Image: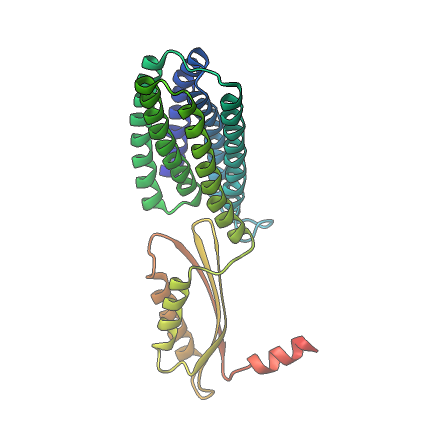
Length: 297
C-alpha cells in the first residue's frame, strides 16, 4: 500500500473516532458548534473514502483508452471534496443562525469542553501526519485533505474557546456566533480547494515560478537560437511540458537531439519528487510564423 493510500486509511479511522465522541456529546449538550463539528467529521469520513478511491484510480498506469493515465481524477476529487465542504459550511451556518433566533441553551458544558479538547489533540496529530505525506508525495488529494483537517483544527479550537466562554460567562449566544465564524471560514477554505482542482481540469499552466525556471534552462543553452510554443500543464503528480526548440539548420540531428535531451534532464531536476513528461520538437528554423498564419486561414 502506498503512503498516500495509508494516509486516507488513517484519515478514515480518525474521522470514525471523532464522529462517535462528537455526535454523542453534541446531541446530549445541544451545542450547535459541537454538533456541527460532528457533522463535519461525518463528511470527513465520506471524503477520506472517496479520496482512497481517487488515489487508487489515479495511480493506475496509462493504457490504450487513457493514454495519459487517470491522474486528473485527483483534481476531480478535490472539486467534489471542496463542494462537500461548502455544503457542510452552509449547514453549520443555518444551524448557528437558527439557534441564535430560537435562543436555545447549551448543557453538559464540562463534558463538551473535555471532548473538544481531545478532538483538538487528535486532529492536530492527524494534520501533522497528512502534512508529512503531502510534502513527501506532493499528492493533490492529500494536500486537500490536510487543508481540510487544518480547518478542523481551527474550528475545534474555536469551539473549545467558545464553550469555555459560555461556561464562565453564561452567554449562550457565543456558541451561535462561533458557529457562524467557523462556517464562513470553512466555505472560504473550500473555495481554494475547488479553484485548484478546476484549474488542473482546465489544463492551466504550471506555476509561474516553474515556467520561468523552464525558460531560463532553455535560454541558457547557447546553441538553441530560439524557442516557441512552450506549453505546460499538470495532472496528478505529473508535469507536462511541450516546446519547439530552434537550432541552426546546419546542425546535425544527433547533436540537436543530444541538446534536447540535456534540456529535458535539467527541467526534470526542477522537482525530482514529481513525474515529468516532456515533448521537445526540434526545428531547423522558426516555423511559428508559418504555422500561425496557416491556423488563421
